[in-house]
Amino acid sequence: MRSLWIGGSGLMSHQTNIDNIGNNISNVNTNGYKKNRTSFEDMLYANVQQNIDPVVGELRQTPAGIQIGNGVMVSGSKQVFSQGALNSTGETWDLAIEGPGFFGVDVDGVTHLTRDGNFSVDSEGNLVNSSGYMVDGDFQDLSQATNISINPQGEVYGNLPGQEEAALIGDINTYNVDNPEGLLSVGDNLLLATENSGDPQIFQSNIKQGALEGSNVDLAEELTNIITAQRTYQATAKTIHTADEMMGQANNIKR
Image (cartoon, rainbow, N blue to C red; front, top):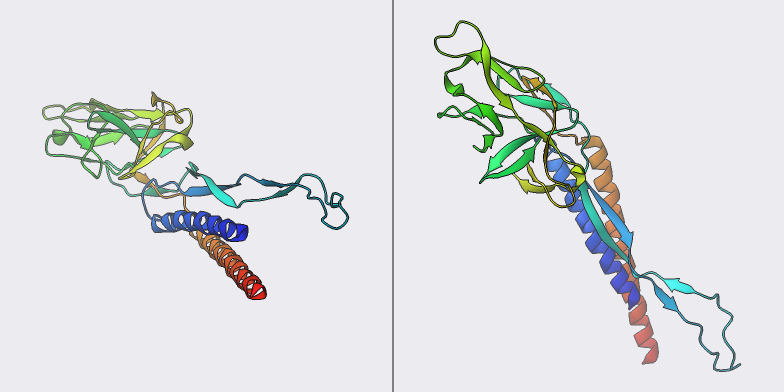
């Protein structure tokens, strides 16, 4: 019976791994996406005690401290914050961060973090992301500005109506946290700080104008991973089938 539970824990755990790998593959072209990795750990072991031999009346000569595992469980699923490729677009408001850090986006008064710098200026002159959320920073009305240039520190320069020379018209905030792996993914390419990540702190990132950071997913690697995960899932399912057959044979012997 134990083998059925052990096999079941393996199926559930490896299904989670397959789900994560599938999500990585699905987001291979998502701007700023960071791949997920599934971690496993073995479950609590059962200690098998020495029993008295019914014939001899002595303890069986079995090793002391025999332990039998109870299966596997998913211990965590974490994002890998390695750098994605910087893809040149030539668009004024396409921004990429090279190295550590995140852009800030205001969602209902709460700062969310993102590596997706696919920004634009809305009709009210605000710098917004692709979902319409305002990008954190200090800006003038950007809708009338021309000849926009953004330096690596996030300072925005441009010409406003009536001005012949470019002036500082905005400053893009960038952030970092103590433990990026503790950030919570909430969709829309956004991350939310948690107790495990620590609060977002202003951080000087290196910004590249006219480029977007691609996903850090290596498609060839993920295809290899999913084949391995599928084989592991199939092998685990086989153990359940074998255990079921053995139990059936044992029941037939009793009859």
